[in-house]
Image 1 (cartoon, rainbow, N blue to C red):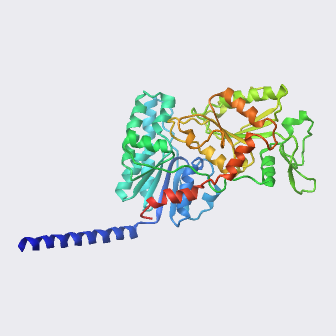
Image 2: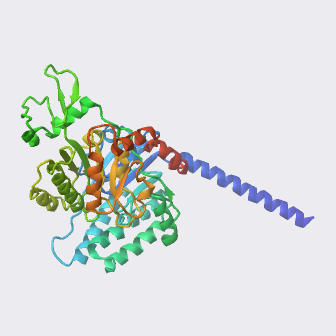
Length: 465
């Protein structure tokens, strides 16, 4: 009897403990602030996925601190949102001279101190959403602050930082080895992990022991086909006028009623497409080592040569958007090309103009190859949101996004890309051919948008918001 009494007493005590724990957990959840920090140790304006995270959280009543470098202008939807507070971080340059390893270490240490100060000053939060890369020093600093303040850390894996370092330092460099060890260790310390492809999810599990959820990049709602009158305003604004093609007999138009592609009637009425207009090809880039733009330039040289030799091809305007370290290098090469029927321009677009350009184009080209082979180019996601067919250079997991002969074409080198351009633009702008079929396929497919995808994949994991 005594033993039975003790057993019942133990069960009662255990039940009471469970009840108290449950009440304490509910109290903590009630006390948990509806506030999330979205952190980018980089240019926030050039981090659309993290902007989308912030917007999705804000649209569900969560207060968001968007923490990162000020550079490019974020999208208007982010700037207008009252629940999103932009908090700038200053980019640390590090010492201008000295051994590379020492300069890198000093820069990382200074950036760590600045980030530590910003996170400790921030209002209490339920989560920190951290973009990786760059993860050095942000992963370690953010994890330490999260543990100190009782905040959950969610790492959004866009790629591997060590694979990007290996492009310039080489895969056997000690810094690359250290970055690999650091990234895998810190990744295992996080509470949640998101990644951009199934291939990356499998690699994280296999090589790092990290369980991640695939959250594919999806186009935001403002990526869509652009109405003709808006196209005309954009072309005039960007200076895509008839001037480069005057040899075909078209006079310049000082009134702004004509672009290279469209015109508005003399009374300011309806806009119409010009007969014999050029085709518009668009590519976007960060001008980094993982995108070889010599492939596109060689393909355009062959296209121009074929056009001058009598092939049934239109004049072509190629717009390459973006900023980055190799832009000056490629701009010099472009300036040395002798092209007659191809015009190449490299403007920097405002965030609001970029979707309009994609929605006005005839074809997109992607030269992103991925330093790890495990991420996907968001630029293609945005192009597909605008029903814009794509020619994309092949790499390991591209098949998760680009379906060859369905929504675009995959190429291996400049010769293959040149052949694809000539085939797709043969007989342009007629409705026959693969270019039209790819666009029709994109229009008829129900493309999942970012917010709908986020609600299905991310929101159910945020049990304390």
